[in-house]
Length: 343
Image (cartoon, rainbow, N blue to C red; front, side):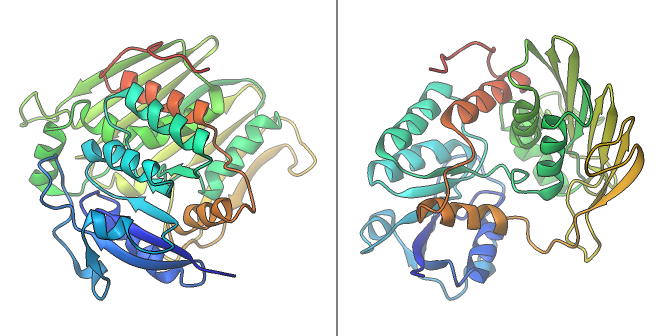
C-alpha cells in the first residue's frame, strides 16, 4: 500500500502539536513531506511556540509545500482565523485536507470551501475530535436504533482548567469566546443527533475577577420541538477536563458519559440505563466499556486515508458540516440561525 504524501500547514493551532505527533506514528499510512511555519501570522493564536514535536521534519514555505511532487494531502493547523483562507488555497491545488476547527466567522466563505471541495471531488475533513470517539459513535447508534426512545434532553460539557491567565486573555480576543473555540465539538455531535435547532440562545459570561470582554464561561441552549440541548464550557473549572460530560435522556433510556475521553491507561466507559431491553442489552443499567484508548486523532486520520484511497465515502456530507457551523456561530452569539441555504 502506497503511503499518502502529506504536509502540515501551520503549527499555531491548539491541536497542531498533537496532530503532527499522531501523524508521525502512522508510518504505514502517511509520509510527512514537511511543515509550514505560520508563527508570523497576525491572527490570534495560543499555541505554536513549542517546536519539539516537529524535530527532524523539514521546514518549508507555502510555495515549497505546494510544489512537492506527488503531494496528496495537507493538515491545516493554523490559528482559527487563518483556517478557511488557507484551506481555500489548498482546495485550489486539489489537495485532500484535514482542517482543524472552528471554521471562522464567515459562514458563506466556509460554504464556498465545502462546495469547492465537493465539486472537485476533494476529500475534506474537519477536526471535530469526537467524530471517531467510540462512545460518541455508540450513542448516535443507540439513539438511531430507538433504544432511548424519543430524546428530550441533552447535557454536554466541555470545561477545563488549563492554560492559566494567558489562555483567558486568548479567549478574550475570540468573538464568541470559549463556546466558539470549544463548544463546536459538542454542537457537531448534537446536530448529528437532533438536527437543526429551532432556536439557539447563548449566555456568554466571564468568571469572577476577569474583564467582561473575556467570555470564558459560556452556556448555549439549543431548542427543539420536544427537547433542549445545553452546551457548557468554562476554562476555570477545577478538575473540569476529567469531568467533561455527555448525558442523553430519552423516554426509554439514558446515556451518561464522563469523562468524554481518556488516555491514562484506564478504559473509556459510559453508563446506560434502559427501560426496555433490545437485541443487545437487557432492561436495566449497564456499564458500556470501550477499552483503553491511546490516541485522540489516529482513528480520524485513518478515516481520512481511507477516503483518499477511495476505500470509503466521507461519512459527513457538506450539508451537515455547514449546518453545524451555522449553529456554532449562533450558539456563540456571532450570528443568527437561518443565514444560509443548505441546497
